[in-house]
Length: 441
Image 1 (cartoon, rainbow, N blue to C red):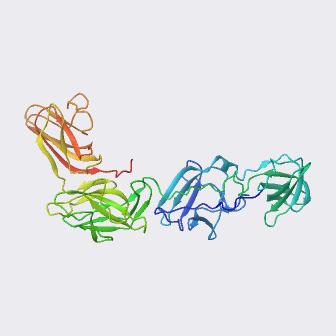
Image 2: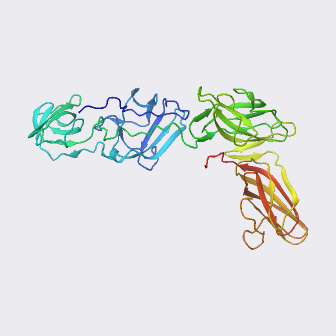
Image 3: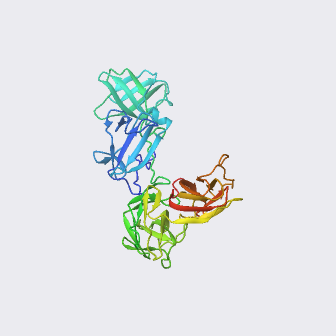
């Protein structure tokens, strides 16, 4: 039976930037477990006679044996971790392979009695069209022990005559007593190492930490990797610094998408990529969702916000993970607290997305014990209370002022809402905020 000659039996792995993975590391393990802690045996041959030592390295994206692309085999489903040459994880799969993979190297008894004809030919009784098709992998017991081969051709009739392509250095002999049925790498019904070729992780975001000295025209962005906003492309950024001038490609160049930098204004930073050349850079914009991209740059991903001061220079902050802390927290609210209903207040946090604001809140009291309920404006307004939900914090007795630190979700207009049980002075300072930059969506 003729085989399709254009099927590629070799699967290819890609780095986070979409390029073929060179000198990467492949770890295969027990299904659902950490493959580095619970490895399984992999093989370079379908008979399971040539073990492959882990980690298995890659060349031009292919699993490599002594520097050349090769097919890998295993006898079960598996977990898989792929690392780049610098040990950055490309992806991890808890379960890979298929039910068919479990049959690899698991030869089954044929329940047929073979008759030796020659070093590569044997016969069995009956027209065994379903049992002995071309391309089938067989395991024999002969005088020399166990040998392997692949069915080259079968002639069916009262006797089925089978011609084998025996493995190198192996042959049938007069001691042929039995054979088992396995699978062949040219048979499309069996696995050829079922490796996913995933060029990126959807939602991938690593590194890209922002920083500025404060009272400075320069914002620095650390090296990192992320997928673009539609998870079509992986963007790998080398550490870069952008100034408040008009955008130009490269580090120490401008980063503003349009117009001139303004005082006391929020700007939103994006990693950008032009797919025609693969160049990755950074731009910042007044828009919290749709920057004006330079020519040929069509892919982007939001990474964080910067705030200018009264001299159109960056305000200092510290970033830890996805949390941004202001070096000098602004007093965003100083007002008489609302009692009958909640009032919304705008904070120094990004707009266009909900963030977890980190707040210092104080409330005064000149008329009995006072508490304040601070909440997301998207949630229902409720009366602050000392005893009933949703309660309130902080609290103060007559002629006192008390404060405390709280975390509150904002709405997409950078606001929180507050409602007190007694009308008095409410103050809120914004310490910082946690911005998931779309990782959780």
